[in-house]
Image (cartoon, rainbow over the protein chains, first blue to last red):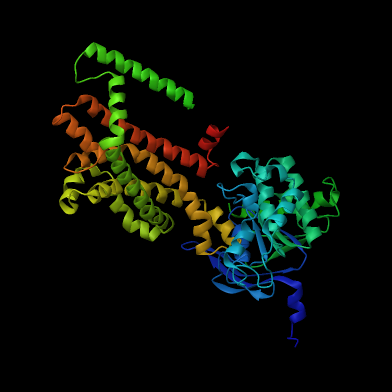
Length: 274
Length: 251
């Protein structure tokens, strides 16, 4: 039986309506903020420090709850971290006491720990064989020979790739990334950005990258959400067809133009805060 | 430290001992070979039993202390409200030299194993709880957030994060306090007891005037402390291979 608007919610990955959020004892970060993300879109979120980009990501991830308004992800209300959402943070979040292989398998191990209860892991998926899936992702990301090393023994880029493996082995449909490459050197960063675009296209992921880098936003975000100074009310969205898999050349003029626009917005926001 | 270096050092110390003994030329400082002979002769008899008694008391205390202090330390580390109440109490009790409690514990528990285990337990308990608490509190919030985003609830966080992360802290605490633990055991065993290295040392010095045997007891007790220290070190290398210290040794 079809419910009205069901067709709409199928295409909507994220539906945020009138969100309010403030940290305890702090000023309001979001005040009646609304935003929509459709399936398959690749977004970048950019803004000056303190604008609430990481807060927004944590809200989307279900790690914190808005004080008012509604947040629907994947067609359902969000109360807690959703099994189909993958989160990659700037700090890779790897367990220091486990090998890269054990780390990459952590998501599946957590699911095996709880069983398919629909709460901590998706109902319809049996965990199945953990290690073959993990090994194939490690191989895909070039970590095969480092699989038994510890995070402290490998480079920053390799750690972040292990974090990516850990997330993607869970087959997410929504990928959330918080400045995932900002602590890496430029060549590693650029190669990982390209890798992410490839993976997103291949897996059909909906993704949101939070970044403070104009270049990264212009390169990775087909649609860009600009957050000015808090409190956030109106979503400022820029369309950026020049980004993504189609255009790999960073000297493309459209790419340069978007960077210029973003720089202008950022400068205005920063100057406004004095 | 290579095993070879340690062996060389042991022989060197033995040589120094031999020289001092010859200079002193008194029955109070017998030469090393005499002590080793006394040790080897007494080991199958009462010295062996005393050693085992002391060893059992130390091991039991360690296990008891780890079983109680580690979970409490983790709890304190991740619950700020609980820590606010309990930490000041620990702060005040921590510096109390637990050895002064020996007479009190003997009054309560008598001259059996319990008092001795209790005093060592107290020492280790405070050391472990403080180190584990600090380790748990120092866990990066991003780490916890990342693992929570994988769907981990409270139970999974304990299993995958809190307990594995506290292992180095536990081992460090045990290693650091093993010296004090053995010393306090000695004091506790000086009081009337049927078995124990402390009693063996004491009885051979004050009543029997058997100095080689006394030194044999001292050597045995030193080996107990040394064994504990190296034992925990070895455990750390096996159980915590990700630590830089363990990697140095293994490479």
